Length: 286
Image (cartoon, rainbow, N blue to C red; front, side, top):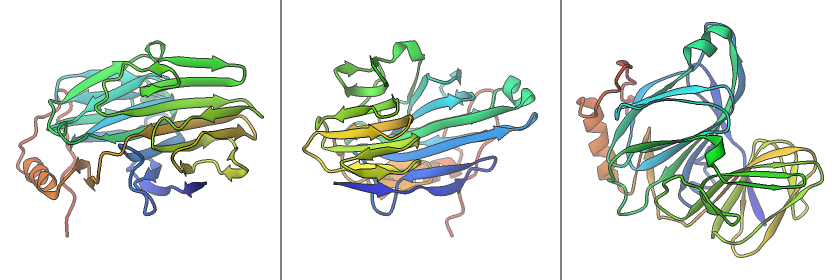
């Protein structure tokens, strides 16, 4: 049995994304609290993505691109371009500020953007860890290859592999490419599991999972993903960490943490981003 979640369109200014999590039917899958599918979209010369500096608490962010590039800058002083196949992993913990923009060279030339933005809520006891940032090149990420199957483990542990990404709770996040008519076995290692179909047509137990939807699976048994045509999927699995509250860019186990972060951003208490003096104001709460 599975539950299929359809994304909602969400404008981020220069681009409209498909927001998959949180959804009315399902707030989280394991510790995964947020999933945006960015693009695919094409920017003409002179235009690009400009996500101005904004704060986070209580989560780790994972950025993965299929096409294009982002320039990440944060309040710890990191300036890192992410290209397709690599992972940017930023742990906000007690608080961090960052921006993501199209690199100057791509902006000047015109370019396509296609990728995934994922938030992983931090478990109890880790919500206030010191902020950090890690960049992992594609060659550093474990890979599983078989005829018609190509899997990259982006974070966590699974498929007899462990990624070097510094996670804080048991989880698995992977990108899977399947050739037509290939079958992939997904074991019951994690109590909460889901698959997002980035592209192509996929079925499980005779139920088709449409492109750009998230299938959430029942726990406790092995299941199979069958590619009806060439397909790309995001696989998510993990241990639940309890209820989390989401407000704007903040994730927390209680409303007091959210309220404190609001005051801190409103009053200028978060550090700035070197080289990027702009910022996104706190949203109107009326």
